[in-house]
Image 1 (cartoon, rainbow, N blue to C red):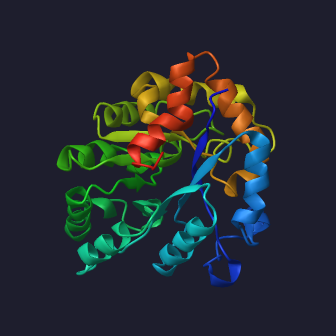
Image 2: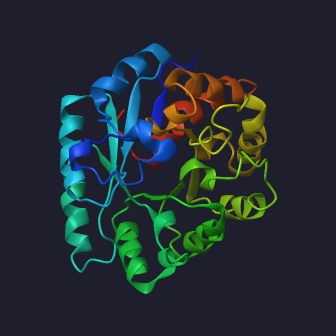
Length: 280
């Protein structure tokens, strides 16, 4: 096992300050505080040394809260926050965040926007141009239907690093791949697009998934992106709907076990360090 694994996709929230309306029905088990103190022992037990927080709501107050958490917990290696990309003062907001230790990127919950083409709007594109100008990576939270936008964005902003979260959520439970793979491969043709091997267990059958259900998607990602543009993410605590944290980590390691040591190391920590410019 490589000496360090970075989990590039974890969330923290305080339910009292979190818009948890979606945590109903099958998602109800998530409706409790998700804090570093609960994740840290699970990471240690699974051999994971560091993690990157990724925003989970459109609230700039979360940026400051999690950046403060990162000051108290050295294992929080990076913070992917949120700003309103359409705001008139988006550049000032980005510059303020860039002055904070551990800030490493921005994300918007794009797949929840009613407009499927929201990411292509002129006002949003102006915000992305600010990120490009200041070399701030942007996480793309897409469903399959949004995936063709990844290549479009990569062409328009060739100096901006884009990170596909959760492989753009292929429909693993339905064993569907043909509706996802062409646009996924097209995105991978652009060297400024990276991809997280994350969120897979919750796109599969929560109660009955097997490693073989995930393998075609991981193999496709390896073929399209190669290890140097892939990185591991657990999507904790959301992953707990389908598997304990340790099983998510173990499954990913098994899925890449056939690779050489250097290739595994890239996926488990090297790509993340380079993509998000993490301090080593």
